[in-house]
Image (cartoon, rainbow, N blue to C red; front, side):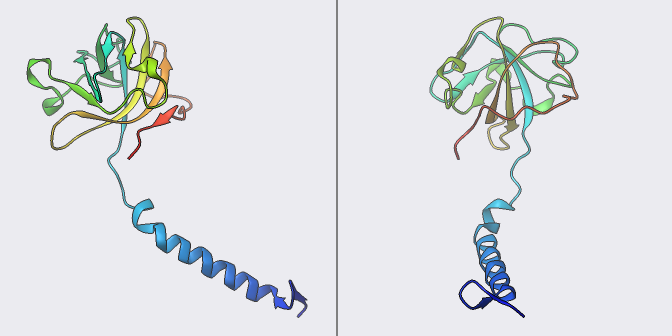
Length: 156
């Protein structure tokens, strides 16, 4: 068998590389492979004002695919809100910084729509922000043809 790279045989080099990759994989497997909460698209129309990391909103009665949310409202693509998603006294809140990438998301103006990826916090029933997809326009679809990469992701 021919020698390469200063006397190290190719198979030895391959074994060394594989060992390094396995060690690296083992070091991060605990964080990378652990499943997190599944986030879903939430469509919101402006007249939303963020204070710190809280953005109060009203639920639209229908899913965004059936009818675009009204001013200050948010909706899932496929349905209206259910059960514990609806907080009494208009206390629905998106938790997380909408200004993590662009400050203008903090005070979304009426007539502007934003797509967010959120998940329901099991303790508070708030919608926790995972990432900001960006500005969107109606009509909305339950089945997006091409998923958009998020403009920014909420820091952990």
